[in-house]
Image (spheres, rainbow, N blue to C red):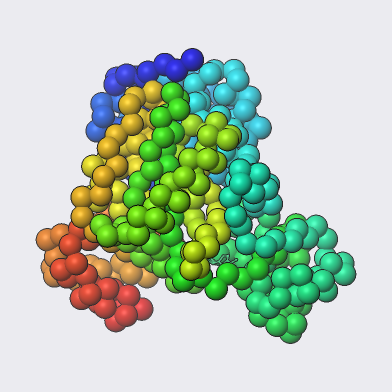
Amino acid sequence: MMRSILPTQKIGVIGGGQLGKMLIEAANRMGYLTSVYDPSLTAPAFSVANQYTIGQFDDYEALSQFVSKCDVVTYEFENINAEIVKQLSDKYQNIPQGEFPLWMTQNRMREKEHIVNAGLPVPPIVMVDNLGDEWLELPKKLGFPFVVKTSEGGYDGKGQAVIRSQADLPSKLSALMDCSVIAEAFVDYDFEASIIGVRGQDGDFKTFPIARNQHINNILHISTAHMDEDPKLCKRLHGMLKDLMEKYNIVGILAMEVFVKGDEIYVNELAPRPHNSGHYTMEGCTTSQFEQAIRAVCGLPLGNTTLKQTTTMYNLLGQHIEPLFKYLPSLSADAHLHLYGKKENKFNRKVGHVTFTNNDGMTDFSHAIFTEGQ
Ligand code: AMP
């Protein structure tokens, strides 16, 4: 039964990274009390939540205490122990998303199987459990190049290698050798895109305008949502995500990353949380992905997702902060700066983003931060 969680009640977020921080900020703005759970005392979300709890993501007792004190609970990252979330969801009945989206996406093979069972296309894939002679068959099955990914735990290209020739097999695989992996055909895509859907507890479903994404070293660099995006592509991606979320009765937010090649679309990955490629929605759309995710778990009507203007988001990594601060006086009026309050500006780790709601100043910014600033 759907119940509405009204402002002044308490929303708990498991995970206190930047996604948790922006979820909490959206909930605060809507008048909710907020509480966040994270293992690290320096988690970015701790600075904005009304209350915080320090605990490990697999500590049943600590999580149980946390969940029991909230009216509704959501999560901001996928590697939370799914079995514990299931037990707590059954016990307290206040985690509308449940454990299913976590469980489905925590293992790449399981995720791909669910995508295929929902009728969506994925690149050709081979599962490899042990590193016997199975490897010898991969080039025959997939051709070169192909991509090897650890089944569990990878992010931003970690736990991943592109195998371009026979010579790459032993060297590039050595780092991945002690775990189960999947190998998939390399898709020579025209571009990468993503779409974020939110499904309410009453089955209402809305997507955000699609973003076209560019990665550098497998880390998202730029996302742009275009006012003149191909309507056929939008309709197809909307339909695919709707089919998938309805098939598994998924509530809350789900992001879907795809490769587009001509008329073909291949689903690469799903994420059961707000997504980096959806940060543009904060200034680009009427409702942000964070507010929409909060609305869904609180049983409120979903917000309008109209794109107001072509919007581009640039990720800031640790190494970009120094050039950014030099450049700040020149930042154009339509550039919206977000810094997450990470304790350290680590190399290749996301520490903030800048969103442009107008192209003015974008080229100069990009040159100063990402070319000169490298
Ligand atoms: P993932 O961790 O699976 O999201 O992969 C990170 C990035 O690696 C993707 O956004 C792509 O840029 C690239 N990548 C992953 N899988 C493939 C593939 N099968 N073909 C081509 N590029 C890929």
